[in-house]
Image (tube, each protein chain N blue to C red):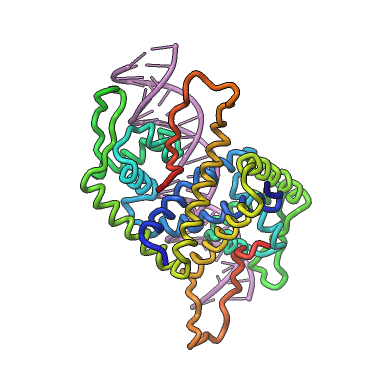
Length: 167
Length: 167
DNA sequence: TATTGTTATACTCTATAACTATA
DNA sequence: TATAGTTATAGAGTATAACAATA
């Protein structure tokens, strides 16, 4: 259990890390904002899925997800096919064009990071990745409190696909 | 030097960490957005300073800084006194009200983080803070490339007050 | 009646450019 | 002429609420 000083510092670090995110976003071409990249990357990593699941993975409201997805679909990077099991839903699938697009965008991120982090070891990067993943899990869990083990619910909640286990 | 896989993962972690930032921001009262908190926290940590330096510390454009500062000044949390050495400038100082306000806001962050990170050790939090700080430094440095030691410039650039050494 | 997804609206954060005042 | 700061404008990201279609 850390002290007040550490928590204040963490809040400030998280606030300041936005500059890094903005710098990375500046590598992107004008028709592909960072929200669209996130959509493509998650579909590539986790495979085809419905809107609701994608919204969970993005950790944003479904209305926001809908806009990002429309942006990608308009450009042919994603296809939205009707879900045969529930006609309210649509299945999102990365197209070939989307896969190619993602590869190109990913290259831009990788080149930028490789330049910035040239003096970071493999382990340094892995460690930071792990810690960020853990931070997200800790944060999510505190908002979806774990069920009381002494009083388990009848049904498990939706599986937590929070991209928290990236490998 | 890490591999492509690690860099892709880092880009995605940074994108996803935004959810944590948003969660933290939701702890704030309506008249105090996170931009204002950042201003108050930096003035508290580094003492009175001018707009330009604050913009550097925030790592945003001065126009953005100006808006945040105006927000705070309108509420009496900051005073803007003329700089006797350069009448184009104004010195920003945290007021007593601003200090009190910051303490209350800081409490909200600390309470939220203490709840989420209850199972993190002191060292875990310190380590994450250090790595985030290092990430920011690496990122900044790659945009303000270090001077060639074999060919030093006549004049040193502005000191890099990037809050990179938080302690 | 509840849920999936879309759309309309509003708010925050940011950057660029035009402008004022001073150096 | 250049610099410190302000303001106007525009763009991206997000959330809430109202809505449509389906369960």
